[in-house]
Length: 231
Length: 182
Image 1 (cartoon, chains in turn yellow, orange):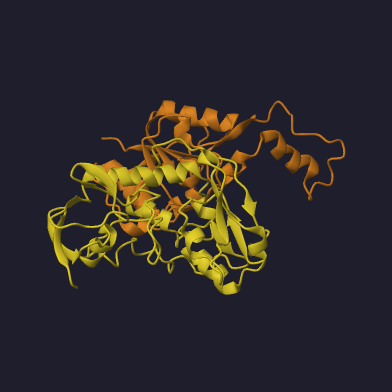
Image 2 (cartoon, chains in turn cyan, brown):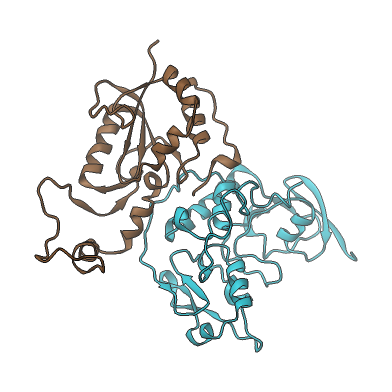
């Protein structure tokens, strides 16, 4: 703790090491800022925008912005909470998120954010896009209906030579995360488990392993996401 | 003051949400004290016989009959509630939404692995049958819906709390455990 600096989140005095990203600095001070694409151990990307805060009147992603001395961060104001909620709603309508039929339900971070923001119905019309399910790998299923393009799997699931099993394909509205066919054939059980665990939604599933936990004992059944952080 | 009147219906749903209404257990006796039921599968009244205060809709709209019933609910009810995932977002019936309707019909009646007896290759075409819609629509994309209670099914406590809040006018408590999408 060489270089401690002071900053404020919603008027609350906080301290952290200079250069720490806001999400992590807030966590160290017992304040939860919701995230989706961000993951401990990976370089943050600021893809999903769920962690948006306001600094100096400007909206910033708190997973990619380091704290500076005297910084004043607005995080839990009604306007920003509604902004985050609208992002979650957009994710729900732009994919095919059928929670009742999803193996990840109860352990899904997107769903948990829906619960956190009390999303009763998205304000946007449902798109119902046509998406494919790739079950060619002997170990996993890659379901594009549920993918939110967070890039966590691309960055974290690699072989010994550092080659990614997953990659982006196409551009813009057609962008999707796909599993490399050849690499998918050689995926180990451990990596398959890790890929499922790292996926914030139910887009990567280990084959023959759905619905392992009963309703009531799943991760977000009783406790909201972030409740381990918030003091 | 006369009792508030409730009507319920199941459109493209599985009646699971109605089961969840029954899941309020012995509170159903209180409910009967508090409200009067009109058109509903609960009392088997088929048509509206008076103006209704609260209409509860289970299921989305997958055919012309669903749309007609939903519109009659909007016309006859002061407040409409979308109950459950199917009413809110189409639910499992909406899994067909990415697939052209003709492809669905062919799979179900002509080419599916379980089709055996349809030797004349007939797709259901009786005039009495409601027309299938191009896709399954959430109720609020057809008529104005006032409140949404998510869940598959919505927890009985959520339904009870919502009805009590609407009848008494008190604000609704929304405990974390009652708002679920599955």
